[in-house]
Image (cartoon, rainbow, N blue to C red):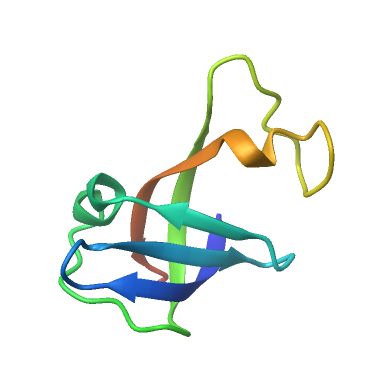
Length: 81
């Protein structure tokens, strides 16, 4: 899945991305480290991998009942073409 880097804190190596539908989704240090990056700038296109939380429907988009609140980014890396 593709997204755009929105925020990044180099001290904690965590931040957030904006999905293509405009939904913000945070990522933690483990997800950032899994991608092998050293730095991330807001506006960069990234590739992310997302896992659904237990007992949630990872549905395709935002809204009630689609599991958006329970989605968790497991990997952030640069989008390559």
